[in-house]
Structure formats: C-alpha cells, structure tokens
Length: 255
Ligand SMILES: NC(=O)C1=CN([C@@H]2O[C@H](COP(=O)(O)OP(=O)(O)OC[C@H]3O[C@@H](n4cnc5c(N)ncnc54)[C@H](O)[C@@H]3O)[C@@H](O)[C@H]2O)C=CC1
Ligand SMILES: O=C(O)C1=N[C@H](C(=O)O)C[C@H](O)C1
Image 1 (cartoon, rainbow, N blue to C red):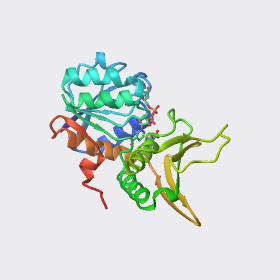
Image 2 (cartoon, helix red, strand yellow):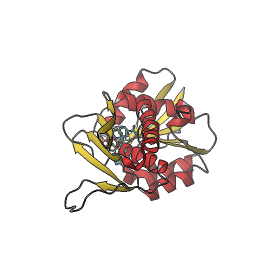
Image 3 (cartoon, rainbow, N blue to C red):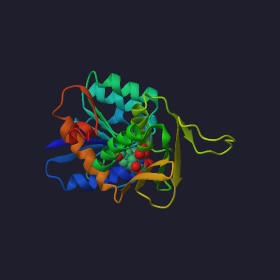
Image 4 (cartoon, protein in one colour):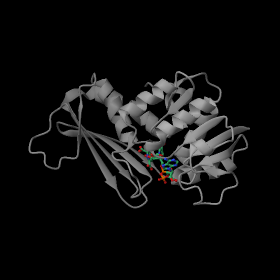
C-alpha cells in the first residue's frame, strides 16, 4: 500500500484525490496538510503546515498554491519523500527550485495531469512546426470562477511547447487591451476566460491565409487530473532522483 501525504487536501482537487484514493486498493492518504485544516472532517490527520506533520509517507501529492512550494520542498527534502506537484502559477524561479530538488529526490511536475492535454501539447508543437509563420497562433483557456492563477499552467505548457518548435523566438501577448498595433508573426496571443464551473478548456488556434485549424481539449471532470496524479505517485515511488513529467508515464507521444 502506497502511503500519501496530501498537500492541499481540503481544496477542490484535494477532495477529488481523497475520493479517488478511497476507491483504489493500492494507495491511501496517511496525512493531509492544508492551511484550512478543519474545513472538512477527514479520516486521516490534517495539519496546517508541513512543519507539524509527523507521519511518514511514500510520496507527497500537491494541489495547493504556488506560494507554498518553498516550504513543501524543504519538507520533502528533509523527509526524503518524492514529490508529485500539480500546482500551477509557478514562476521560473519555482521551476528552477524543483529542478534543483530533483537532484536529491524524485520530483514529478505537470501543469496538467490529463493524458489528453499531453497529447494535445505534442500535436500543437507539431502543427506549429509544420505551418510555420504563415499561421498566427492564439491560445484561449477557460476555467471556473474560483481559479486564482491566470493564464492557466496548461496554457503556458502549450505555449512553451509551440515556442520550442520555433527555436524559442515567440513573444507571449496576454490579451490586447491598450495595444494599438497589429500583431507580429512572432506573437502568441494568450487569453483567459473565467466563469461558472468550467472544469478546463484549452484551444490553440492556427489562423492562416483563408484557413484555420483549431485544436481543443475539454476536461469534463476533475477526476482526469486526480487519476493522473495517482498514476504519477505510483510511478514516482519506483524512480530514482530525477525530474519527471506525464510523458514519462504515458510513453513517447511523438507522432
Ligand atoms: N496539474 C493539474 O492537472 C491540475 C492542477 N490544478 C492546480 O492545483 C492547484 C489547486 O487547485 P484547486 O484544488 O482547484 O484549488 P483550491 O483553492 O480549491 O485548493 C487549494 C488548497 O490548498 C490549500 N492551501 C493554499 N495555500 C496553502 C499553504 N500555504 N499551505 C497548505 N495549504 C495551502 C488551500 O487551503 C486549499 O484547500 C491550483 O494551482 C490549480 O491550478 C488543478 C487542477 C488540475
Ligand atoms: O485550476 C484548475 O482548475 C486547473 N488548473 C490547471 C491549469 O492551470 O492549467 C489544469 C486544469 O486546466 C485545471
């Protein structure tokens, strides 16, 4: 039985993970950490801070807030516990911290734990490479009205994969309010919609002369992210130190 320390256990994704792990005989929550520890009644202890957690887990799963990352990394390093982090809104400095941490313990990060988005990322990069600069690229993401970061981590993941296909010469343009000039072919427009209970929708538009290609992924339930994180946790407990992502568990998606 794999023992999980669930960081952010009382959040929306935390509740999904608690439910999914109850249904899985191979994995269980040993302790939770959440800055609102009493929000729900849980059948495992919940602490307000990593420093208070005495339980030992085989792996930490994190769906919380990017501001918690430094303390979470300190905890994982001290407890020598592998870290699966799905939290978004990470800065370049945060990513560098995760990469440094992965020299000492196994670390898994993906801004989107679904299989579909990871395939879409490959498809979008390939489309960018094939279509070249004749096609303008815009990314639209839609999420629920409780999401705190924008644009989404997934929008960045898609943009970065496309950018890599263009030797990283793209410039990200966030909305166009106040812009009084035409777009350049080096621009990638990124636009965030927030409303209702939208689980998550990402569209990459390639708009060319007289034709348009759109690639869309729609998440219909948060379970897809939770199941991906559980797969990642099971995978990570068997790995040496290193920095892993979804491609390591779903195999090469190169088309
Ligand atoms: N990679 C993926 O596939 C997915 C990533 N996410 C990301 O996961 C994160 C959480 O999403 P939700 O559950 O929807 O948010 P949420 O706001 O419902 O839950 C976050 C939880 O973390 C707790 N928290 C915040 N700061 C903390 C701290 N310093 N220490 C301990 N606990 C803290 C909050 O009290 C809350 O219970 C977000 O960054 C979101 O973008 C969400 C869905 C899928
Ligand atoms: O906050 C969310 O809900 C989600 N966040 C992730 C992101 O920022 O990309 C992944 C998913 O789209 C849901």
